[in-house]
Structure formats: structure tokens, C-alpha cells
Length: 271
Image 1 (spheres, rainbow, N blue to C red):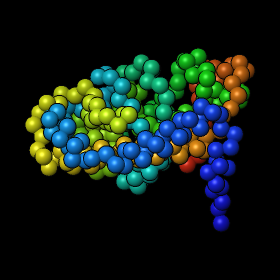
Image 2: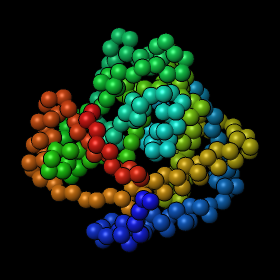
Image 3: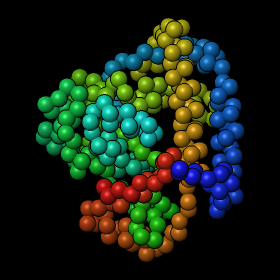
Image 4: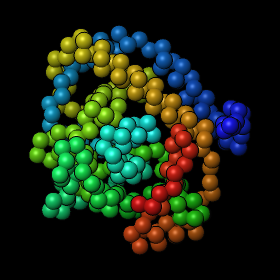
């Protein structure tokens, strides 16, 4: 039988700051579970929203379009598409790289020969981190870059890999991530916020408001629980100049070695 250990065992070796974060997350989760969905639905209805199917939220040219994923969401997309984990998701890294123009035929590489999902050239969709100096605090002595979570893969031009170019159709719509299904709304610090979106201010029915509020609360609690589990499993590492140099050398050779931390532990990948 697998022994997951006690809460005290999991928290052993944590810094005071880490323990403070864990405690704060537990309290926020407890409060989040008691939030009134009817009040949230009323706020959503007052704000108004209707998706315009413009696809701008999926395109890098219109802002940060990273979509954070939980391990469970990755598995749902894998099951729906028959793609590998690394074809669906990559390490969650800062959104500072400049989008590149996609090569001929690349924009719809995901859609060739399939109405749902085709083969993806992993090298074409990977996003190596180009300036390791900005991730110096996330590089260990072996030159591994530590990332804290997963994000949906993007094309080299920065657009979501599952966005159909000509129709703005989502190829994984039935299993799209929670962030996508609740966009442009999100909850942070127990308060409702919105991202920039052309669909805001448009009439939304009371029924749709309640449905969206329920999804939004589920997403909020799920993300908090996922983050808490990651923090509880996280083990810190040393930062050295040698590790930074190794990461730079790897990058010059066209390789990034990541250690991805998530709610299930760590995964080492070469991207």
C-alpha cells in the first residue's frame, strides 16, 4: 500500500514563508467553498457577457493567452484527442517571448486530416525560454529550469495550438479547460474580476449567469486545491551560478530541461 505520509511529514523541511502560504491557501479554500453562487450570478448578470466567437482570447497578438492546466484537465484533453501529455501541455513559463510568424502550413497543422485532432509536431509547438537570466531563481545546480504548473501548448506564433485559423473554432471545445469555459471572468482573493473582452456588457440571461457562476466557483476551488497540493509536495533547491551557466549552454544547443512541479509531484522534461 502506498504511504502518502501525514500532513506534518509533508510539511517537514518547509520554510516559514512556505508554511504561511500553505496556511493562507487552506483558509481561502474554506471560505471559497462557502461563497454564495447566487450573489456571484447576480454580479455576472449585472456585468453582462456573450461570447463573440472572435478568437482573440486564444491569440497571442491580443495579449497574454496562456491557459493554465491542472493534471486532471490535461488527462481529459488527452483522452479526447489521443495526444500525449507533452503534445497537449508544456511547462508554465513567463509570457515574454515574442511570437513568431508561423511557417506555411503550420497554422493548421493541428487540424490536418482530422476534424478533432491530428498529429502535432512537438518541436513546432514548443516554447523554449529564451532568456534564462529572468528565471535565475528557478534554475537548480544541474541547469534544470523549475516551472510551477502546466499550460496549454501554443504554436510558434503564440496562438493556442487548438485554435482553428479560419473559423476561430476550438477543436477541444467539449473538454476545453476551466479557464476557457469561464473566460473572461475569474475570481482572485474571493473577488470577481474580468479580463478584457469584446463580449462584456452584452445581455446574459439569469439561467446562463447561474451556470457560469457555478463553473467559476468550481474552477476557483479546484485551482486553489491544486496549488495547495503543489505547495505541500514542493521541495526547495539550491541556486548557483554554475546551474545558470549550464542552462544557458543547454539553450544555446536548442534544449531546455524543465522540472515541472504540480499537484502530483514533479515531472522532468526536455523541451
